[in-house]
Image: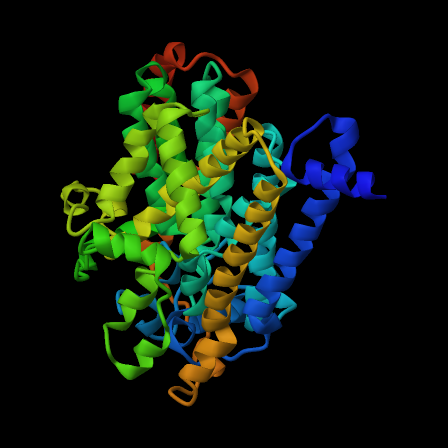
Amino acid sequence: MIDRLKNVGHLFFHFEEEAQFHNLFWGWMLFLYISGLSLWGMFLNWGNFDFIVQDWYEITGPRLYFLKDAIMAGVLPLHMTGTSALVLLTDRFLSIPDQLLSPQVLLLKFMNPAVFVLANWLVLYTVGFAGLLVFSRNYRLSPFAATIIFLLFNFNGQIEAHLSIGHITWGGYFLFPWFVLFILELQDKKIQWRWAIKVAGLLFIIFLQGSFHQFVWGLIFLGFLVFVFPKQFWAIIMAGVFACLFSAIRIFPAILIAGNVNQEFLGGFPGAWELLLGFVQIRDPAVMVQGLVHPTYVWEYDFYLGAVGSIFLAVFGVQQWLTKSTFSVRFLIPITALLLLSLGGTYEIIRVIPLPIFDGERMTTRLLSLPLVFLILFAGVHFQNWFNQLDRRPYHYLLLLLGLGILGSDLWTHFLMWQVSSIFTLFAGQYTFNPAAWVQANYVDSLYTGMLRRGLIITGLSLVLGAGMAWFNPPVGISLHFFRNIFRRLHLFGRHI
């Protein structure tokens, strides 16, 4: 019995032969998955809440009840009653880019919006967990290492704080593990059209979750990648181009409000020290009620990992990467670039580009989210490599289990402070939400519907074209002349519809 327990303990920290490892790994990952479902269910109070605080009241509730009304009436969600839930910019609902419009919104026909929020979040969590699972298998992570990246990815301060105050469109974050997996292929494979199309398709799916910001961060990341992977220059460019073409149905109607957006640019972290504090200091949501700071800064500066999680990220995500890396150091350029853009007013460099899609970032601390996911996953691999080479003693296992326990305790403290029931208790009685106020109010609007039609056609044609290129998978370079003609024809066609 003792020998069997020792063997199980050994396998928990190592990736051994499949015959030994198979049942333990899959059993443990099933346990983690169910635990994550339960924790997110608890975080959202199992869909038992009203839309009466923060963005739940101002944005999320009105938009979801409007969508539900349109779905129940069997009409397109074109025009909304009032503009307050659309940032006072328009009543054209589909012109707002950060709006959840993926197929799962049809569940609103059968659920009230609060339950839908829970169901939708669990669906996206499942997709994200599948990405972590594939990553763990590809890089031969032990159950212990997989547990660390599971906790840090799913329950860091950034994703919890944003969901807590009503940002359900942050769900596209859960697709980032797949983005990391695809990007890492640049160092291992000969990249052709299939790679470009799957990256573009992933970004399109992220956009459909209402995760407009995450979509933009992905494009910026690709933009910096072209400088460090010059041999894959055109593949990376085509990934970005097709991501925008696929997303034309969301981008075209947004053009109608581009000239009206005049929101104050808030910038990013005041300095590196404030950024570091975001990882180790719990941001107490109670200060929002007390009026001690601008409320936005509470959740926007929150990237909490706890002391153990932050040390783990610094040592294995950064130090080990730069000295004994499994991953190309070239990825340091786009990761560092997004980190720098999250500081102060650095992002103003990009905002001067006359493209509406890039000027929607007001609070640029958020850009740190994508580098954070890369570093969490890198840290898991480098930790496993380090541990495999360690001259292990029994106390090493005890110290690692102690560290995992402290990490779990730190994240649990943050979880309890930011779960929606806690936030709703803090702000109880501030607002009264009226679902009946948010119904469809469609009217004839040829400019708006014309942009929607153009966007839909471009999206449809691009998806067909992209599917064909992914199927035949030719080298990217020899296809560019052909595509120049295709894009010219699409442009001329768009001007006449």
